[in-house]
Length: 402
Ligand SMILES: Nc1ncnc2c1ncn2[C@@H]1O[C@H](COP(=O)(O)OP(=O)(O)OP(=O)(O)O)[C@@H](O)[C@H]1O
Ligand SMILES: Nc1nc2c(ncn2[C@@H]2O[C@H](COP(=O)(O)O)[C@@H](O)[C@H]2O)c(=O)[nH]1
Image 1 (cartoon, rainbow, N blue to C red):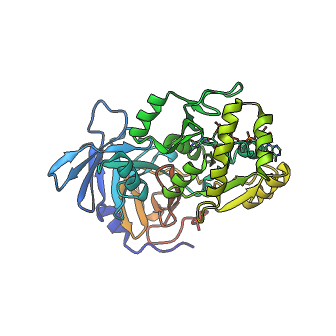
Image 2 (cartoon, protein in one colour):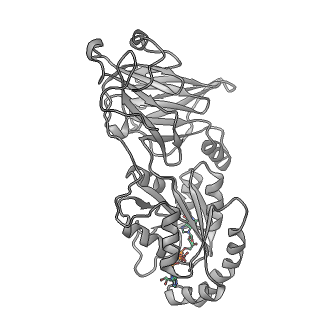
Image 3 (cartoon, protein in one colour):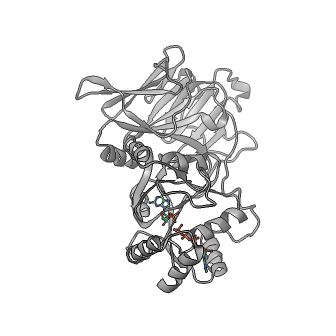
């Protein structure tokens, strides 16, 4: 039996409180967070996605912020409400299950970090809400040739529906068997630099003379597929991600010796002698940095490949060999057409116009955001949505996420 809502059903039907705003015909909602007023809607006829503008009190004018992350598609039937001091929750009425809950982050650690990078105080970021948890993203780092890619491939082959690879961008030339969009997004330096300036990257670094980076989209694409994201990035990138709001597990792969590392780089046969020397020189610094306190959660020595893979699986909690341990427990329930929204603590009560007091179980929903995790970049996980009877209690057959 669930917890009784701490209010009367009539309050729900009255709707708007706690800063909740609804749009149907006016085409935009207004939500006040702190001292700023955020207007969300489809006020721009030429746009394909939902627009955001902010009333800046100190300037006394409207500003159009840089909007990061995948933007929600247009909808003129929206609810918005503030969630704390750092984000706005947006509910798209009648949208498909995976597109109905969105968070506009206005002052989260990620947004603050991006404001610094972009040198602008007008930055916001969208993050799509998903039910349940997919496991935390995994950052795998270590010197070139240590076997990161080999270990990641083994995971992806054994657990294809659980893991997704974050496809990085790079300015280096493709190797013989590398495919654009699968191994990397191969790109021109000028294009990548422009995209970095536009705030499209979670992290980027100059590695062995080329530019490499993880775009926000590459992490989001994996999260959207309900998979756990694996990032293969260098130590500088790992540091940047550690400093970001991406809640990840950080694993450093170390070689048994520098001689073994050299042998592996040579046996791979993908680099020129000059490039091998450069990678080996850089490896020394990376091996020292790998030991930096607080940076990596786990350090694995990749001596015997099978033994190292087994240790990796154990620390990721993958004791079974079949791909049947999908940690994503996303519940797929659709929302009714919501006609009133009310917020009590971290629970948002959603009611349909068709609510029939006698049989309202499927018309009254609680969206519980108390176990919310993650956020931009990526997705906001850990949401729970369950139908309730108007005077308390969970509807039959549903359990709360715990
Ligand atoms: N434990 C191991 N023992 C021997 N060889 C290994 C081991 N692990 C990986 N290798 C081999 O070492 C070479 C380099 O491995 P891999 O390409 O996976 O390294 P990497 O860390 O991904 O390198 P980069 O950072 O340059 O992409 C490959 O030829 C691979 O087959
Ligand atoms: N900081 C980042 N480092 C990255 C990214 N993608 C890959 N890498 C690292 O670069 C080196 C070299 O890779 P290679 O494919 O040229 O051998 C290696 O250490 C990778 O981990 C990234 O997006 N960001």
